Length: 171
Image 1: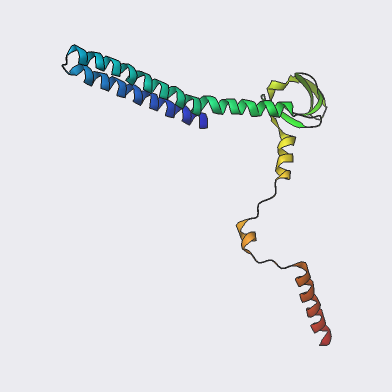
Image 2: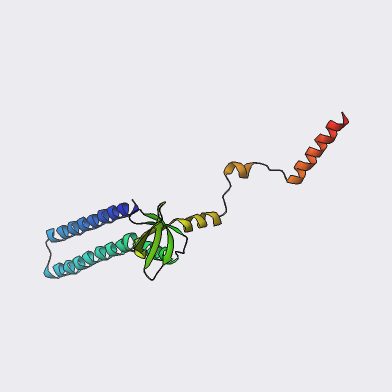
């Protein structure tokens, strides 16, 4: 979804820059001028063509190429950090438990009959066990209701209970 939006934005921007370039050239060619003025507009049209083109490449780099490289780097780190016993999901949707790790191959067990499948490391899409460990390591954020409520200490609760039991014993 995010890639589609960035591609649409980059396409729209490049179209707008191209339209501006052609409009500027049409305006510059419509005027009558001397040879020196024509040479100046030719030099300006060169810069007016190069500048939008460079801008488009810079925008394309930051919107498309850089995030893609970041995703690839995270996937490589995930694939290299797989351990025996982790539950993984492949790009094809196969879910299994890692039994053996080789250089670029991994053997996983799938299903109730414990079928073993050998796959390449690049085919792993997700490490379910690592995701669960990361979620458990993060502290649970308190809900706004819990953080706003007044909580009593255990000692205060015990004192109140003992006072109630004393009061009930006197009657």
